[in-house]
Image (cartoon, rainbow, N blue to C red; front, side, top):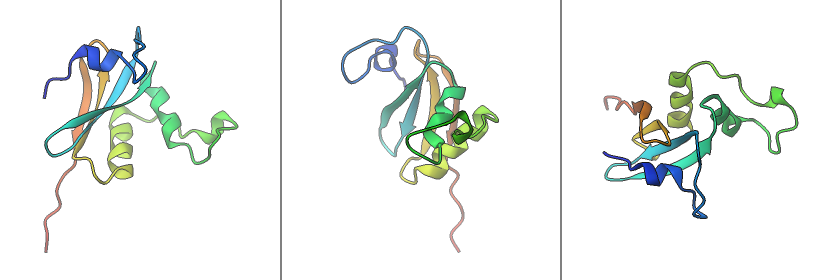
Length: 103
């Protein structure tokens, strides 16, 4: 599925990001553009155990991009996959949900 850079650069208010990354959520037949962050590590703020975040210790430590993608898959049961895109349109990493065998 081709994601256009304009979709990644523009937020819901029509403002454009100059640099950074977006999360893209995949469903059976479509996708949606998610959060924006200047750094890939910055997406970890979405997994903090408290709101508002009082201290940096409230944010889980960044381990790897694979760990980050797994967190999204674990957190959102309705997605079939997730990806991190540079706002220039380059896909940095993607991960699909594996289907377990039914017994």
